[in-house]
Length: 278
Ligand SMILES: [Mg+2]
Image 1: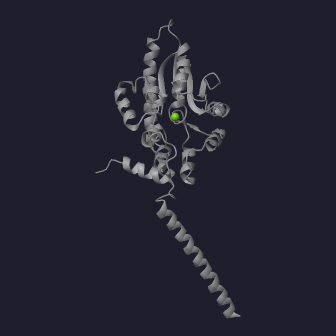
Image 2: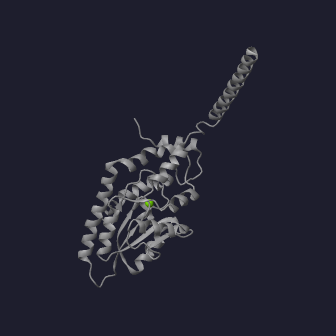
Image 3: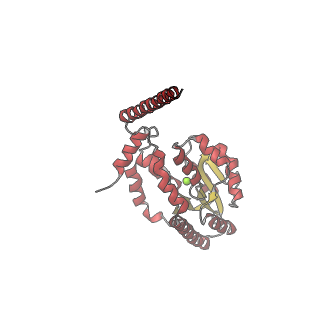
């Protein structure tokens, strides 16, 4: 009986070891044939997410942006003639006024790139918090008679959840008229021009260069940088920039050259090639 038990134990152990070693071989085969195919490339965002969620420096940069915005708006208000068009602020939403870092944290943890359905599901929670300083600044603008237009590339079917989220946080002008989400094939310039028909837009707020002007749309890394240098006088004046180390056109257009179907191994290689070391 004891021998039989020992035999069974040894057999079971051998099968387990065999299975383990064949799995291991498969893994090795996979990793040797496709490089780092199994790598969770989304993990590269972790340090950016952590910085946004925990650092005083992130908050300080946001406060700095909104302090400058208030200063510039004060100048515009004192120079504004009653005969002029009413004043407006044009602002982006995500990572400009509201913080979606929990969505990016989840992407990094589960190793999943951007998926519309997951982005919409996160939006439906209506749980994004306000970016530090955003609410105070926009309420200052609103109390001084400045209209706020939220021009965001959130999907059009996210309108109600977006209104709800902004209302929960007490953002002014959180309604159908002032929230202008992406229509099919439409960039932000069309929506900015629509605002300009009836308002004098004096400040543009965003975490992405395309939030300021269409000259930055779909540009290479080199062009984005050259254009930023060219427009240097506008930053902190008409263009107010918020930090976003997690995602954006700096990555999709800049690093990945506007191509969305790189494999994780290719992305890893591209990222490493972009590093400036010595
Ligand atoms: Mg944004």
